[in-house]
Image 1 (cartoon, rainbow, N blue to C red):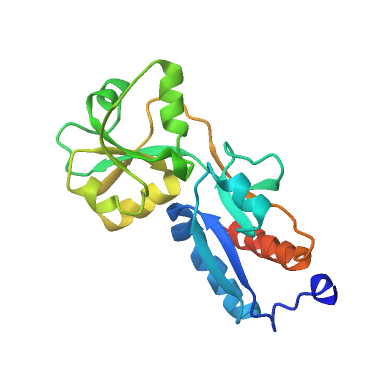
Image 2: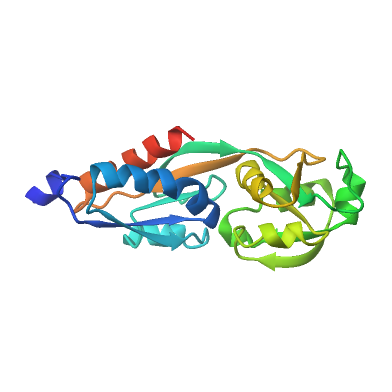
Length: 217
């Protein structure tokens, strides 16, 4: 009982399990691990690849301590809050033969696209296109964004992605970033957790660290 009321991050060697996408790993893990190194050097983090279809089960069973996921997928029994926002853009090779300074809807629909599996939580663009009555040609479907920079840079494929990862791709590869030629609601990343009686203090500490690390991005 005493251990559930107290949690000393300086002394703890507890391991936390955190669900997030590969974009979350790229964007959020560096500041999170830098903070832990200073204030909780023996605390460990196990990353679980997010699957939005399983979040409710994972949180309720205690398989994960917290999750960072798209607001569109919110297990009702859990607690959560928006801690990061982004918007979608389109990326293409800077050597793309048919794209110039502005991307039109006709050009967007005429080109072939890469689709990231909806289980990752990134389905807002596809859902918006369906609402508008459009379909696009999918040449490649992958489970993660992180493998795609070289693919986009060396082909004529288009990728719709959150702007943070898009500009990271463009900084290291021959890639250009375009505004989408249609509106898509903002991507809102939520911190989700479900309290369990034996671990409340440690879990709340973890969530506060995640808030503080991501708030400065």
